[in-house]
Length: 230
Image 1 (cartoon, one colour):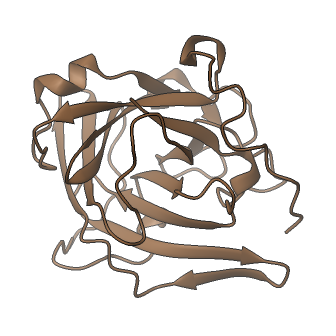
Image 2: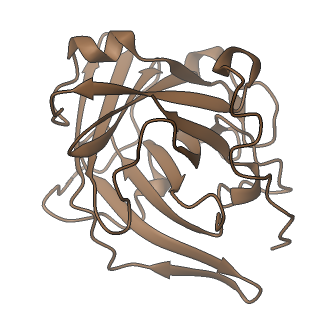
């Protein structure tokens, strides 16, 4: 994979997210949130990132659009996806939620990729959650020799979901750790948000910040957006 130079961390940090389309702000929510707190009032105060384009940059079908909000507390990073769901779910017939589900990305899923060190965006973490409550967490490292995956990475994340009418809500709670240390106000991380939906490929791969690769590929940290903790 070609590795282009990353943008300087904190570049244009005095600009608001309104004129930085690749920036989303994480709300400090005060009290801790659980993954099952899908309707906590804090979510209504959060800024949202709109996931409306295919990985290629082309606009996705409107019935597959989603939006994501990010909040943080003294204990955890929290993400909630609200998705249009107008077609049958592509999920496991026998979900298991007691441990990570490898291969979850082959079905309907919401994802956040996080690089907490903006000086080393080639080391990042992948978190996914499905409409079934299944989840997966992975540690990634890209070097000149390719990409390596820490399949045994254990973040302690939890996930929850609900489907009501034609709306799917998926949330994740990721506790702070040595891998993801609790940030200070004003800190910026690199981040991208994704949704995989439906049986068709490549039309099933949506991204907040499109990766614009020849084939669907979310593992392009140089195009990650910015996550500011406020």
